Each structure stands twice: as C-alpha cells, then as structure tokens.
Amino acid sequence: MKTKTALLPLTLGMLVAVLPAQAHHSFAAQYDAAKPITLTGKVTKIEWTNPHIYIFMDVPDEKKTGAAVNWALEMGSPNALIRLGWKRDSLKPDDMVTVEGLLAKDGSHVANAKSIVLTATGKKMLAGSSGGTGGASSSEER
Amino acid sequence: MRNPKVLATLAALLSLGAALPAAAQWWLGVPDTLPRDAKGEPNLMAPAPRTRDGKPDLSGIWNPNASKYLRDISVDLKPGEVPFQPWAKKVADERADGSHSREDPDANCLPQGVPRIGAAPAPYKFVQTPDLIVVVHEAFSLWRQIFLDGRKLAADANPTWLGYSTGHWDGDTLVVESRGFNGKTWLDQVGKPTTERLHVTERYTRKDYGHMDIEITIDDPGAYTKPWTVKENLSLLPDTELLEFICNENNRDVHHLQGGDLR
View (spheres, chains in turn cyan, purple):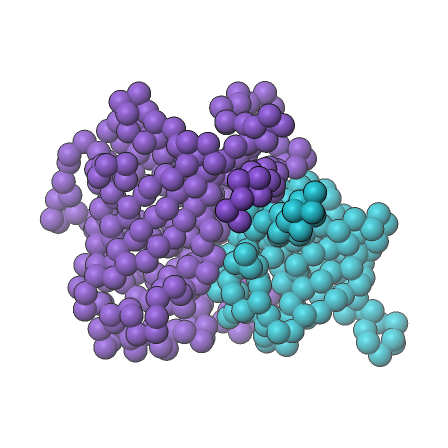
C-alpha cells in the first residue's frame, strides 16, 4: 500500500501528461513562464474555437477604482479540453472564475491559462495550457 | 523498480492515468478491442499485436511524448552535435530566441512537415493494410500515406509540405523513407531549417501494446553536412477517437507574435 501512495502523485502527473496540450506556436515567444499570475473576475466572452479557446474576463483593477480591466486568456484547443472532460458549455458568460496562468511577454492584458476554478462550485479545470516552465508544453514535466 | 509487484502497480496506475474520464466520450457503443487486466483497465504492456501475415500491427491512436522535441528536436543531443552548414546555423541562431516565431509555418496553421508533425501535440491514427499505411493526424486534420507496394518516387515529383513516403519492414521495424519536401518547414519551434533536399528516415518499433519507439534520421545535404539521428516515442491513447482540428478557424497567435494585441 505504501508503494501505491508514493506513486499516486506520479500517476496524477501522468494523467495530465498523456493528454495533449495543443500548441501550434512557440510558447516561449508569446508567454513568460517566469511570470505567473492569478486573476479573479467575471467571464465576459468565450471563443470555443481552434486553434485555441479564448476566454475574456473582467478583473477589478488593482487600484480598486471600481473600473474593470478586460483580460484575454489563451487555453488549449477544444479537442484538448474535451479530452480533459470539458463541455462546450462548461464555462458561461457571467460565471465568476479564478484563473492561474502565465503572463504575455508584451505586457498586454493577456495570459496563457493553466487552470480555472469556477467560483460557484469550487471545481478546478485544467485549461490544456500549451505553456510550461520554459518549454513548449507542461507535458514535458515527466 | 525491478520489483515485479511495483512494476505491476505502476502499470495499473499508468493505465488508470491514461484512461479518459467518461465525460470525454463522444461515441457510444464502441467495440472494445483493447487488452485489459482483471480490473478492466487497458493493459498497455500487453504484447504488441500482429497482422494476419505476421507483421507487427501498428494500428491504433498514438500520442507523441514529444513536446520537448517539438520545441527542439535535438534536445537530447549534445551541443554542437547537429551538423549545421554555416548558413543553416546562422538561420537557426537568428530564430532561436523566438523573435521570428511569427514566420514559423506551424504558427500560421501551415503543415508542420516531417518529422515535426509526429511531435505536434495531437494524437494520430495508424491505419495499416499490407501494402499501405495511412497516418491520420488530428493536428490540422492532415494525413500521410506510406506505400509498402514497392513504388518509387519520380525524380521530378512536385515538392510538398509532408513529402512522399514509402516503407518497408526491417524485421519488426517499419522503415519509412520520405522525400519530395518543399523546404519551407522548420524542424522544430526554435527554427532549424530544411531544404528541398530533405530526406527523412523514420524507424517505428512497437515495443508492446501501448508503446512505440521512433528513430528519426535527418538527411538534408542542403542544410546539414551529414545525416543526424534523434529518438522520440509514442504512447497508445486508449478509449478515445480522433477529432477534427481546423487550425485556421481563429488563429490570433500570428498577430500577437507580430506585436499586435491578441484581441
């Protein structure tokens, strides 16, 4: 039983690893693996399209002026997310979410999402990120 | 890890890990052809299947364990082991920092070329007959044909993105020879160039039910001073099917890579 316990994290890692993260472009050219960001806000739009799904969300600005900044989050392809258990309507406009991702290198309000937690349910969904720590895909973390 | 019990546990857990959640099934009533253990999990370490004529059967949906090779095909080689010609080294050095990524055909939804398409992060299906193997790639919904019927490529064949492939068996290894490329593709995301003189040899060996090794030799006298070889591998992706993947539906990346707003 000890062996099983020890191997469990490895297995969960592989569950992620066997699922394809769709990246048709260089991750490192667009996103900075050294700049993680966590954003909480309201979904304003979802583009369930190839080659990447994009979600847009309003995030209250840091100065608490009441104004919101609209962020764009790049995720994996629809196929990658379907294989992760997503449905086309898993996320809807007006859903409150917390997204963990990596910032775009150009300083714009763009990030590559790694995971999304739906506030209403607390359910965490992987975003089929094409990014990892310096590589083209997190799936190389084997 | 030599302990058979530990190995068996690992195998079971690996199978568990490879199984897809029920929510990800979109076909119902699919006939089950996978070897399974007593618990019903796919046994990916079962022996590799054979065709009726005794050849290894490479059929199945395969997933590349290749993101690091997609980024840099020579990542496992030592620095300096890629035998670049001077011009090719210059091009690769200029592209290495990502500043030319907007010119990468793959980022523009154009075909990845060979062997890069085999490392693209999407599964692909081998459909095998005695005289022809068809590889259906989910990536950009592309396909390759590998003819085993003895034909040869004409010297003046029109250059293409994915080339023309013939194959033969060397024992239990499928040897695929591909030529007739257009020289537009990058071998990886860091940008190693190719020319129309590219000749790729891929050697596929299905080690067991769920694992396939590939040895790839790049022979491009237009860009490299001698042939060079790398190794990649595939895992069988059980309990899934291929899906359509039309890259050009909403490709915002090129604009973003050009310095434009992703929106």
